[in-house]
Length: 306
Image (cartoon, rainbow, N blue to C red; front, side, top):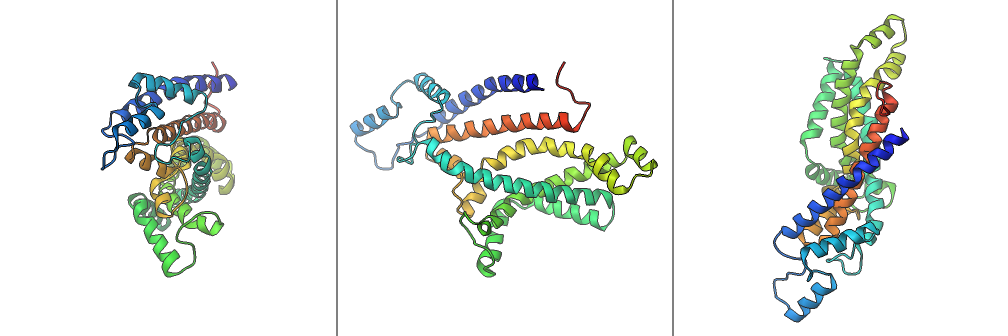
């Protein structure tokens, strides 16, 4: 297993390199620049600004300089937030986004898996139809609709919870629920389908034939097989949730890093966008690796060693 992990980490290096290279040249190819203003400034001042941020150098030289700085852990200064470096912004925002995403992921996993198992055990009955209906509703209603509705209902009209901000457990409820709702729906559907298939497998029928209680059959023999599709989905889902949600963080005024990507792209803040891309790519690589390891733990037939 250790050899497999090392090979996967070594294989991720060229993947990260390609992502950084493509993202670097794509954002530079977009029209406009970080210091383009409606009112043109003095050419000499613009020349000094470009020299200060190495923007006066040829593109390939900017790329080599940026790559060298990234290898040393330096993401560079933010072009639009002059008092902060990109690392400073991540140091402040990433813990908030990770906390928000982790709570939403945990809630989605607990509620979604439970609803999926209940629907599978009550297939073609009222509970099954209710779960499928709720899951379909949760998938089709986007976050930018759910977030204002929950904020208006529970934050403004009823006054039960804060309508925005971050810090106390009460502030976390509405953002976490909003972010978790689509994931609950997806996990419930995945768990339902996999559980129905597992309940019809030979080893589960054999366990029932031995007279094992339903609780033991479901928890010990069914869930282990049914959870594999959910584990596969959790890899990219966890990376997306833990690196921040633009919509949720913006509507609830949460100081995470999800909003940095859009704000940086609109303002041509090259270093901020590149830093966000690298963080998301690293999270995707790490969580896909964790998913592969979880597969080997959950399914004894999966072996990565030759």
